[in-house]
Image (cartoon, rainbow, N blue to C red; front, top):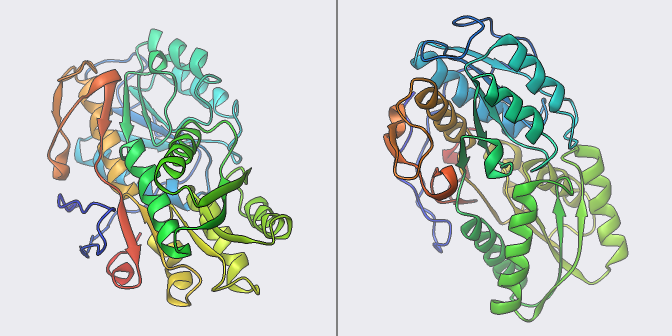
Length: 347
């Protein structure tokens, strides 16, 4: 797999289209990938298990493609497990099972910053390396966090997009994932601050939670529009939420009058961009995120890094990365997708 190392800032008025050729197939089953090196953690135990917020989520299906490809490149064993619903404690049993199986590393997108910490630390005590990605835990519960993009950048691009689409004034709402999602809450706090400082004529009237469930998010969109008849725009910083909101708007009287932006994947959002429901949205490449996370996990297992600030490691086709403060590795800048470039992407 070849990933583009050219990153385009999402704040640019015109995004540079860069075709990404995405290959590999996702292993979305909930089974174990085998012992991959025995029951003890160690430098030869390259059994790497991905634990997303929930299974059946297109975003995590895509990140797992990258993870699986990376694990195969390093000669390890890939597995993906996870709950059907993204609730705070739903991941605990999967962490415990992986610990009992003696996997080399867990790669986790946390549904809650605290709820899974005890289970993760028990895994670490047993020799399992823990990498969080997409949504972090408290830093003392993991070895590394692979951050998809700088939180301030993610918040800023979404606010800038909605501001441009509604003319810099009016009422907006946020349709988020779960109320406990670490990443969502951090972005919303920063969006609120940025709105107050740079867009005083835009009012955030309500934040609602669709729990990363399609139907719940669809229903919450309908409720927002009924509750706030003067609503001019919706930001949904979650791939499930933005697709569900777009689906609602596309067949409603609000199409073309209520703007929608947020974080989505091109394949989910293409029809809504092409039919005029959505003008532009943003995201990073989740396949790259999973790919980088797997390489980071392998570097920890093999002792190439410890997670200390300044550590460097190679991530296959993505090149070299450096560990920053608080054990964080930054994938790169978010990217703006619109009608001019969405046809160049397939994920």
